[in-house]
Image 1 (cartoon, rainbow, N blue to C red):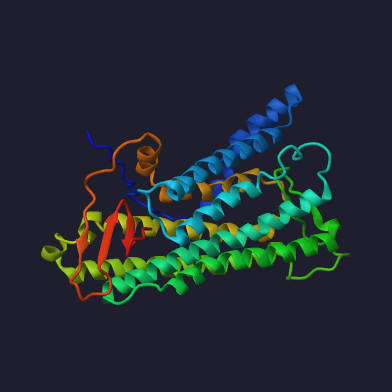
Image 2 (image 1 turned 120 degrees about the vertical axis):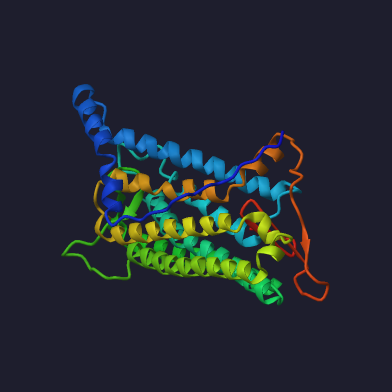
Length: 356
């Protein structure tokens, strides 16, 4: 019996009041926990903090498992930008766990609070930068496939890989510097889940060059570019399918994927990126608010990453010693073409021995 797992995303809709729905969806839980708090003395905030830590810890473990599976398995091949992106989300989860044990009660150590705030703001720029590098490499290789030209060079691939860490460390050093020079701006957020930098009061110096603002702006800019390249990638795939024709495409690797699957995945990435942009915009108005629903929504990024990019059949085969699926088919282009090997499986594009 063959084990198969497919990801079916039938419909993706973005409603104008999506954000109101997300925040109000937690109100029944909040009301119930407030009632319990008044009767038993158990603080309602502890429920949200515990739930937040459990989700981040669980997702950290699952995504780390996905990363290690691809890293050490001889049968699972991924590109450098794929590893960079998954690693950025693993680091995302770890960043929000740094305050574990200091979330409730006395004020956390200033050094720990400054370090977590720096890591969180840096990760806010690191993850979308890594996702942008991933989509850009996919775009370049798809263009090479359609135009029958050479794919991304080795130097170009390393440039895409090194760009996100550069953004991360520049942001990290800057936020640490700001935190050390203005420790009065460091505090736990209103929901007691992590440290951040509050907005300056009227008597304090206020400037747009603040870590929360800069990190949100960088994330939004990267998000807009991700949306552009995701949509563009879908256009390229559709054009390639039309170019090959129905009769000819049946013998190519592109038909084995059922291109609609890859298009759905890219569309889902686009929708999630738009949601991330909305969250980045709303962050400008809730930096000092006690909003556990907004904080819990931060776990949506690693959740979506695990289900979209964690190849679950690879996990089963590697960790349960199952044999590889025999339905992988390889298609070769004419000998004179620069791209000689293309294989597409499970929504992943493999060009010249690398998969997405």
